Length: 358
Image (tube, rainbow, N blue to C red; front, side):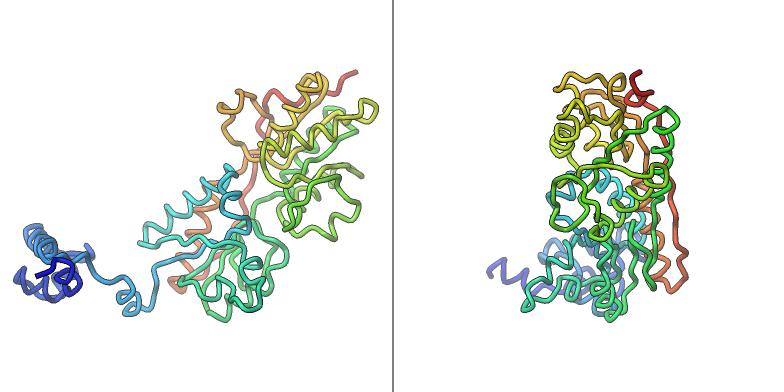
Protein backbone atom coordinates (compact mmCIF):
# COMPACT_ATOMS: atom_id res chain seq x y z
CA UNK A 1 0.00 0.00 0.00
CA UNK A 2 1.21 3.52 -0.83
CA UNK A 3 2.88 5.10 2.23
CA UNK A 4 1.47 8.53 1.41
CA UNK A 5 -2.07 7.14 1.39
CA UNK A 6 -1.44 5.47 4.76
CA UNK A 7 -0.29 8.79 6.22
CA UNK A 8 -3.27 10.59 4.75
CA UNK A 9 -5.68 8.18 6.44
CA UNK A 10 -3.89 8.10 9.81
CA UNK A 11 -6.04 9.38 12.68
CA UNK A 12 -5.67 9.77 16.41
CA UNK A 13 -8.19 6.96 16.86
CA UNK A 14 -6.00 4.64 14.77
CA UNK A 15 -2.95 5.57 16.82
CA UNK A 16 -4.83 4.92 20.07
CA UNK A 17 -6.01 1.51 18.84
CA UNK A 18 -2.51 0.46 17.76
CA UNK A 19 -1.00 1.62 21.08
CA UNK A 20 -3.75 -0.11 23.06
CA UNK A 21 -4.91 3.05 24.85
CA UNK A 22 -8.01 5.22 24.80
CA UNK A 23 -8.29 8.13 22.39
CA UNK A 24 -8.17 10.61 25.28
CA UNK A 25 -4.93 9.06 26.58
CA UNK A 26 -3.40 9.27 23.11
CA UNK A 27 -4.41 12.93 22.92
CA UNK A 28 -2.81 13.65 26.30
CA UNK A 29 0.38 11.89 25.17
CA UNK A 30 0.66 14.32 22.27
CA UNK A 31 -0.31 17.49 24.12
CA UNK A 32 1.61 16.88 27.34
CA UNK A 33 -1.38 18.42 29.11
CA UNK A 34 -2.03 15.58 31.54
CA UNK A 35 -0.45 12.75 33.56
CA UNK A 36 0.64 10.01 31.16
CA UNK A 37 3.22 7.40 32.14
CA UNK A 38 6.47 7.69 30.14
CA UNK A 39 6.15 4.15 28.77
CA UNK A 40 2.58 4.87 27.62
CA UNK A 41 3.66 8.07 25.90
CA UNK A 42 6.50 6.23 24.18
CA UNK A 43 4.06 3.55 22.99
CA UNK A 44 1.69 6.18 21.58
CA UNK A 45 4.47 8.07 19.81
CA UNK A 46 5.86 4.85 18.35
CA UNK A 47 2.40 3.93 17.03
CA UNK A 48 2.15 7.40 15.51
CA UNK A 49 5.51 7.03 13.79
CA UNK A 50 4.50 3.65 12.40
CA UNK A 51 1.23 4.99 11.01
CA UNK A 52 2.74 8.26 9.81
CA UNK A 53 0.54 10.33 12.12
CA UNK A 54 1.91 13.81 12.74
CA UNK A 55 -0.32 14.88 15.62
CA UNK A 56 -3.74 16.41 16.19
CA UNK A 57 -5.03 18.75 13.48
CA UNK A 58 -4.40 22.28 14.85
CA UNK A 59 -7.39 23.66 12.96
CA UNK A 60 -9.75 21.08 14.42
CA UNK A 61 -8.28 21.61 17.87
CA UNK A 62 -8.81 25.37 17.54
CA UNK A 63 -12.43 24.84 16.56
CA UNK A 64 -13.01 22.62 19.59
CA UNK A 65 -11.42 25.13 21.96
CA UNK A 66 -12.91 28.20 20.32
CA UNK A 67 -9.41 29.71 20.25
CA UNK A 68 -6.70 29.86 17.60
CA UNK A 69 -3.78 30.04 20.03
CA UNK A 70 -2.48 32.99 18.00
CA UNK A 71 -1.87 36.63 18.91
CA UNK A 72 -1.56 38.98 15.94
CA UNK A 73 1.19 41.59 16.05
CA UNK A 74 0.48 44.45 13.66
CA UNK A 75 3.59 46.35 12.56
CA UNK A 76 3.03 49.45 10.47
CA UNK A 77 6.34 49.34 8.61
CA UNK A 78 7.16 46.79 5.95
CA UNK A 79 8.68 43.82 7.75
CA UNK A 80 12.07 44.30 6.11
CA UNK A 81 12.17 47.82 7.55
CA UNK A 82 10.79 46.80 10.93
CA UNK A 83 13.51 44.21 11.48
CA UNK A 84 16.25 46.72 10.73
CA UNK A 85 15.17 48.60 13.85
CA UNK A 86 17.19 47.05 16.72
CA UNK A 87 14.41 47.93 19.18
CA UNK A 88 11.78 45.73 17.53
CA UNK A 89 13.58 42.43 18.00
CA UNK A 90 13.98 42.59 21.80
CA UNK A 91 10.42 43.90 22.05
CA UNK A 92 9.14 40.87 20.10
CA UNK A 93 11.35 38.60 22.21
CA UNK A 94 9.73 39.92 25.38
CA UNK A 95 6.26 39.50 23.91
CA UNK A 96 6.98 35.95 22.73
CA UNK A 97 8.45 35.00 26.12
CA UNK A 98 5.28 35.98 27.96
CA UNK A 99 2.83 34.53 25.44
CA UNK A 100 4.85 31.32 25.19
CA UNK A 101 4.15 30.56 28.84
CA UNK A 102 0.50 30.09 27.84
CA UNK A 103 1.28 28.17 24.66
CA UNK A 104 0.37 31.08 22.40
CA UNK A 105 2.09 31.88 19.12
CA UNK A 106 2.69 35.18 17.31
CA UNK A 107 1.45 36.04 13.82
CA UNK A 108 3.18 39.07 12.28
CA UNK A 109 0.94 41.32 10.22
CA UNK A 110 1.78 44.49 8.33
CA UNK A 111 0.18 47.92 8.34
CA UNK A 112 -3.61 47.49 8.30
CA UNK A 113 -4.10 50.72 6.39
CA UNK A 114 -1.81 49.49 3.62
CA UNK A 115 -3.37 46.03 3.59
CA UNK A 116 -6.84 47.48 3.21
CA UNK A 117 -5.95 50.20 0.73
CA UNK A 118 -7.65 48.36 -2.13
CA UNK A 119 -11.43 48.53 -1.52
CA UNK A 120 -11.80 45.10 -3.11
CA UNK A 121 -9.38 43.43 -0.69
CA UNK A 122 -10.31 43.07 2.99
CA UNK A 123 -7.78 44.29 5.54
CA UNK A 124 -5.60 41.49 6.86
CA UNK A 125 -6.74 42.15 10.42
CA UNK A 126 -10.32 41.48 9.32
CA UNK A 127 -9.60 37.89 8.32
CA UNK A 128 -6.44 36.82 10.15
CA UNK A 129 -7.03 34.00 12.67
CA UNK A 130 -6.11 35.37 16.09
CA UNK A 131 -7.40 35.57 19.65
CA UNK A 132 -5.93 39.00 20.43
CA UNK A 133 -3.88 41.68 18.71
CA UNK A 134 -0.95 43.89 19.65
CA UNK A 135 -0.47 47.10 17.65
CA UNK A 136 3.16 48.25 17.34
CA UNK A 137 4.63 51.51 16.04
CA UNK A 138 1.20 53.02 16.00
CA UNK A 139 0.05 55.99 14.00
CA UNK A 140 -2.55 58.43 15.27
CA UNK A 141 -5.04 57.27 12.62
CA UNK A 142 -6.07 53.86 13.83
CA UNK A 143 -9.76 54.50 14.42
CA UNK A 144 -10.95 52.34 11.51
CA UNK A 145 -8.63 49.46 12.40
CA UNK A 146 -9.56 49.53 16.07
CA UNK A 147 -13.27 49.65 15.21
CA UNK A 148 -12.83 46.60 12.97
CA UNK A 149 -11.04 44.69 15.73
CA UNK A 150 -13.74 45.62 18.23
CA UNK A 151 -16.33 44.13 15.90
CA UNK A 152 -14.36 40.90 16.07
CA UNK A 153 -14.58 41.13 19.89
CA UNK A 154 -10.93 40.34 20.43
CA UNK A 155 -8.68 42.03 23.02
CA UNK A 156 -6.43 44.83 21.76
CA UNK A 157 -3.17 46.12 23.21
CA UNK A 158 -1.09 48.92 21.71
CA UNK A 159 2.58 49.71 22.29
CA UNK A 160 3.50 53.42 22.19
CA UNK A 161 0.18 54.51 20.73
CA UNK A 162 -2.03 57.47 21.39
CA UNK A 163 -4.42 56.31 24.17
CA UNK A 164 -7.65 54.86 22.77
CA UNK A 165 -10.79 53.75 24.54
CA UNK A 166 -11.00 49.99 24.95
CA UNK A 167 -7.34 49.46 24.03
CA UNK A 168 -4.75 48.38 26.59
CA UNK A 169 -2.11 51.12 26.62
CA UNK A 170 1.55 50.03 26.91
CA UNK A 171 3.17 53.45 26.94
CA UNK A 172 6.73 54.73 26.86
CA UNK A 173 7.44 58.15 28.32
CA UNK A 174 8.67 59.51 24.99
CA UNK A 175 7.84 63.12 25.77
CA UNK A 176 9.32 63.16 29.29
CA UNK A 177 12.44 61.31 28.13
CA UNK A 178 13.07 63.70 25.25
CA UNK A 179 12.55 66.64 27.59
CA UNK A 180 15.11 65.06 29.94
CA UNK A 181 17.67 64.85 27.15
CA UNK A 182 16.90 68.36 25.91
CA UNK A 183 17.22 69.73 29.43
CA UNK A 184 20.68 68.19 29.68
CA UNK A 185 21.69 69.97 26.48
CA UNK A 186 20.28 73.24 27.80
CA UNK A 187 22.13 72.87 31.12
CA UNK A 188 25.39 72.44 29.22
CA UNK A 189 24.78 75.74 27.42
CA UNK A 190 23.43 74.65 24.05
CA UNK A 191 20.97 77.17 22.63
CA UNK A 192 21.11 76.30 18.93
CA UNK A 193 20.05 72.70 18.47
CA UNK A 194 18.61 70.56 15.69
CA UNK A 195 16.50 67.41 15.84
CA UNK A 196 16.66 64.42 13.49
CA UNK A 197 13.27 62.75 13.66
CA UNK A 198 12.02 59.27 13.03
CA UNK A 199 9.57 59.00 10.09
CA UNK A 200 6.69 61.31 10.92
CA UNK A 201 4.20 59.96 8.38
CA UNK A 202 3.36 56.84 6.39
CA UNK A 203 5.05 58.24 3.28
CA UNK A 204 8.45 58.24 5.12
CA UNK A 205 9.41 61.59 3.61
CA UNK A 206 12.89 63.05 4.04
CA UNK A 207 13.65 66.72 4.34
CA UNK A 208 13.61 69.77 6.55
CA UNK A 209 11.07 69.73 9.36
CA UNK A 210 8.07 71.80 8.27
CA UNK A 211 6.50 74.39 10.55
CA UNK A 212 3.19 72.54 10.45
CA UNK A 213 4.77 69.16 11.33
CA UNK A 214 2.46 68.64 14.29
CA UNK A 215 -0.70 68.87 12.17
CA UNK A 216 0.72 66.47 9.60
CA UNK A 217 2.45 63.94 11.84
CA UNK A 218 0.87 60.50 12.16
CA UNK A 219 3.66 58.79 14.15
CA UNK A 220 2.72 59.19 17.80
CA UNK A 221 6.18 58.33 19.28
CA UNK A 222 8.04 60.68 16.93
CA UNK A 223 5.60 63.52 17.58
CA UNK A 224 5.79 63.00 21.35
CA UNK A 225 9.59 63.13 21.25
CA UNK A 226 9.46 66.42 19.36
CA UNK A 227 7.01 67.82 21.89
CA UNK A 228 9.44 66.85 24.64
CA UNK A 229 12.20 68.96 23.06
CA UNK A 230 9.76 71.86 22.74
CA UNK A 231 9.04 71.59 26.46
CA UNK A 232 12.61 72.85 26.92
CA UNK A 233 13.33 74.92 23.80
CA UNK A 234 10.92 77.53 22.44
CA UNK A 235 11.78 76.73 18.84
CA UNK A 236 13.64 74.03 17.01
CA UNK A 237 14.83 73.14 13.58
CA UNK A 238 15.10 69.65 12.33
CA UNK A 239 15.30 67.07 9.61
CA UNK A 240 12.82 64.27 8.97
CA UNK A 241 14.53 60.94 8.35
CA UNK A 242 12.81 58.37 6.12
CA UNK A 243 13.97 55.48 8.33
CA UNK A 244 15.73 54.73 11.59
CA UNK A 245 19.10 53.94 10.03
CA UNK A 246 22.70 55.11 9.98
CA UNK A 247 22.35 56.02 6.31
CA UNK A 248 19.36 58.26 7.04
CA UNK A 249 21.19 59.89 9.95
CA UNK A 250 24.24 60.47 7.77
CA UNK A 251 22.15 62.21 5.10
CA UNK A 252 20.41 64.30 7.76
CA UNK A 253 23.75 65.21 9.33
CA UNK A 254 25.23 66.40 6.04
CA UNK A 255 22.16 68.56 5.45
CA UNK A 256 22.05 70.06 8.95
CA UNK A 257 25.80 70.69 9.18
CA UNK A 258 26.51 71.73 5.59
CA UNK A 259 26.53 75.51 6.21
CA UNK A 260 29.31 76.49 8.66
CA UNK A 261 27.52 79.78 9.37
CA UNK A 262 24.32 78.08 10.52
CA UNK A 263 25.49 74.91 12.24
CA UNK A 264 23.80 73.93 15.49
CA UNK A 265 26.00 73.16 18.46
CA UNK A 266 24.00 70.03 19.26
CA UNK A 267 21.84 67.44 17.50
CA UNK A 268 19.14 65.42 19.24
CA UNK A 269 18.44 62.26 17.24
CA UNK A 270 15.29 60.23 17.81
CA UNK A 271 17.18 56.92 17.54
CA UNK A 272 20.71 55.73 18.18
CA UNK A 273 21.13 54.65 14.56
CA UNK A 274 20.26 58.17 13.43
CA UNK A 275 22.72 59.57 15.99
CA UNK A 276 25.51 57.33 14.69
CA UNK A 277 24.80 58.55 11.17
CA UNK A 278 25.01 62.19 12.28
CA UNK A 279 28.36 61.47 13.95
CA UNK A 280 29.62 59.88 10.72
CA UNK A 281 28.58 63.01 8.79
CA UNK A 282 30.25 65.28 11.36
CA UNK A 283 33.48 63.29 11.08
CA UNK A 284 33.41 63.61 7.29
CA UNK A 285 33.02 67.38 7.64
CA UNK A 286 35.98 67.57 10.00
CA UNK A 287 33.95 68.18 13.16
CA UNK A 288 34.91 66.62 16.49
CA UNK A 289 32.23 65.08 18.70
CA UNK A 290 31.58 66.43 21.32
CA UNK A 291 34.13 69.28 21.07
CA UNK A 292 32.50 70.84 17.99
CA UNK A 293 29.11 69.10 18.05
CA UNK A 294 27.17 67.26 20.75
CA UNK A 295 24.97 64.35 19.64
CA UNK A 296 22.28 62.69 21.76
CA UNK A 297 20.65 59.39 20.80
CA UNK A 298 17.55 57.51 21.85
CA UNK A 299 17.15 53.74 22.45
CA UNK A 300 20.24 52.46 24.25
CA UNK A 301 21.45 49.93 21.66
CA UNK A 302 24.80 48.18 21.94
CA UNK A 303 27.24 50.08 19.73
CA UNK A 304 30.21 47.71 19.64
CA UNK A 305 29.38 46.80 16.06
CA UNK A 306 29.20 50.46 15.02
CA UNK A 307 32.74 51.61 15.63
CA UNK A 308 32.55 51.46 19.40
CA UNK A 309 31.08 54.95 19.78
CA UNK A 310 29.94 55.38 23.38
CA UNK A 311 26.74 57.31 22.76
CA UNK A 312 25.07 59.56 25.25
CA UNK A 313 21.53 58.28 24.87
CA UNK A 314 18.09 57.80 26.35
CA UNK A 315 17.74 54.09 27.13
CA UNK A 316 14.33 52.53 26.64
CA UNK A 317 13.23 49.16 28.14
CA UNK A 318 12.55 47.41 24.83
CA UNK A 319 12.21 43.87 26.20
CA UNK A 320 9.92 45.03 28.99
CA UNK A 321 7.64 46.75 26.45
CA UNK A 322 7.00 43.35 24.88
CA UNK A 323 6.69 41.59 28.23
CA UNK A 324 4.18 44.14 29.50
CA UNK A 325 2.07 43.74 26.37
CA UNK A 326 2.22 39.95 26.68
CA UNK A 327 1.19 39.98 30.32
CA UNK A 328 -1.67 42.34 29.53
CA UNK A 329 -2.92 40.20 26.64
CA UNK A 330 -2.92 37.09 28.83
CA UNK A 331 -5.00 38.88 31.46
CA UNK A 332 -7.47 40.09 28.85
CA UNK A 333 -7.80 36.62 27.34
CA UNK A 334 -8.51 35.28 30.82
CA UNK A 335 -11.33 37.79 31.23
CA UNK A 336 -9.39 39.80 33.81
CA UNK A 337 -8.85 43.57 33.87
CA UNK A 338 -5.44 44.69 32.60
CA UNK A 339 -4.22 48.09 33.83
CA UNK A 340 -2.32 50.41 31.47
CA UNK A 341 1.47 50.41 31.78
CA UNK A 342 3.85 53.37 31.61
CA UNK A 343 7.52 52.50 31.09
CA UNK A 344 10.29 55.03 31.66
CA UNK A 345 13.55 55.78 29.86
CA UNK A 346 16.81 56.73 31.54
CA UNK A 347 19.57 59.08 30.40
CA UNK A 348 22.84 57.18 29.98
CA UNK A 349 25.95 59.38 29.87
CA UNK A 350 28.45 58.66 27.13
CA UNK A 351 31.15 60.42 25.18
CA UNK A 352 29.10 62.33 22.60
CA UNK A 353 27.67 65.21 24.64
CA UNK A 354 29.55 68.14 26.18
CA UNK A 355 29.40 71.94 26.49
CA UNK A 356 29.40 73.99 23.28
CA UNK A 357 32.69 75.29 21.94
CA UNK A 358 33.61 78.70 23.29
